[in-house]
Image (cartoon, rainbow, N blue to C red; front, side, top):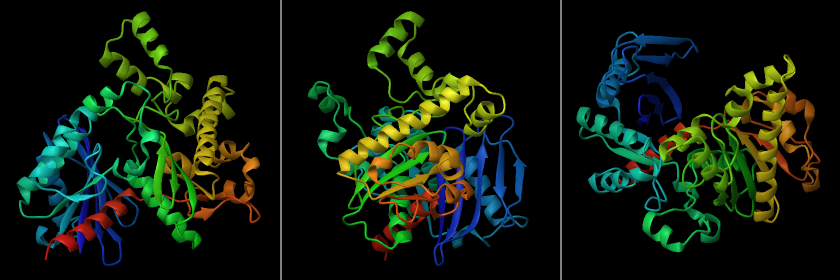
Length: 402
């Protein structure tokens, strides 16, 4: 079965085509700057070479059609026709409390999803555009929604509730939802497979860290807590997001800087984090500034970043009653050995011992980086959210369509 995975943003479409008979990737790429004059599609060839195709793409239907045209075209095509495509799986960001698992998309589901747009005004409407674009081009193809928030719906109420009047939860649904759920689910399952152990009885802390970042506490294969909240702003220090901050500091800034609700949201989401402290958003650039330029702001940013992450790991070890596995994933987690080392330094009280040589040599490989006698296994597990979406899509389509 051939399944196309789509991740539609407000001005972008990322795609990955799988042959699920062997889970091989047939094609992958993405469109950027939809609605702008300099829009383009960049695809990755089997050789690893990247090709950029420039084309005016005014809206998402034209973008999805362009993806289909490339997939079936003479030069870069991998399908003889779109009839070879069996289903489309969509990354859907905010499922609220209504979606605790992936579902076949129909009008009822899409209406509910649309009603949750207040919780993710930048993401949910974009996700809907992608579904609508596929429907217009291939009206009869099965489409499945896989929600970023779904994996975290197993959190107990005392973990997801905020200490505000309960009426605000009842009225507006204000609570912790968490994000990156598809990644946390994939790497926690894969870590158990890789280590040859059962999720049952296993306590795992997964660290998905990149430009965005979150941590999850997972017990018996189920999420019991996660660092992101109502929105992806809460929790860790990120590329441009502040992470945890005193609500009083927010109102103080609004008063002193004359910020509107929209203005303070832009400030906390796009002007803070690594950028706010060091002036840079890419961890590699921050590291270079620290080591080569002796930039003390860069040093401070890295210290803050790793301290916040280490603090969350410790908190989740307490919530889990101990920890058996710590997983690093995401762009920073997979590739920055120094960040991994700085993060776990200080966690020796858990019985954790890092193999510094193995860790230093690992830049994205699936591997155990803790010492053989470490009581806690520390692993690097590259995430594959697209494969998780494709797998969910395959299962749902096989079970619902005869």
